[in-house]
Image (cartoon, rainbow, N blue to C red):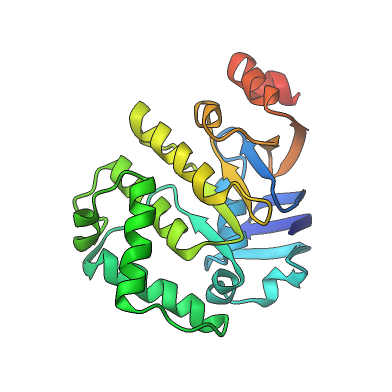
Length: 247
């Protein structure tokens, strides 16, 4: 599904990714862990197409397509979803309307018919129920007045509505309490654990992996993946730290 080969990228002319390679197949969940400044968020933003993240070498294919030939909205329509560490607030824009416009824009990009108002509301209620998010929350402006946990749960609802092939989730556990962590983990499993989907989960800590049990764990350090293993690698990192494990 996703093949990253020797990816190199810079931010403000500073090299961040320095030859990163990774392959993700359908049905797999991969977790990337690493210290601050290792390049974890840069990887997510580069794959998503955020401006200011310049690819200087290597290649990435997504479902057989050259990812970097696609504009960000085309990547989204092709089935790539990027979840942010800090979801932004958009005052004055209804969350439910935002989600409907996003869903129908992607459907249009794929040549599909738009969802009617009734069809969309049924879908939104279903996905909000998975994340235990009151539909009244979605009538408010995007993320305005939401707690950290509510922002992350709302983002998971968005992921469920857009129904991507590949979800890249950047520190979804950031700012979550124990209950919200469990709900988000269960939501990721319910929405994305399927034979035709995949997840790249970027995290600092092992705790989210108790709920979203990855098939593979990778250690990212100094812009490269320096070690890979199974779920037990996350426990080793938690116990011994990055420096000891990645040395």
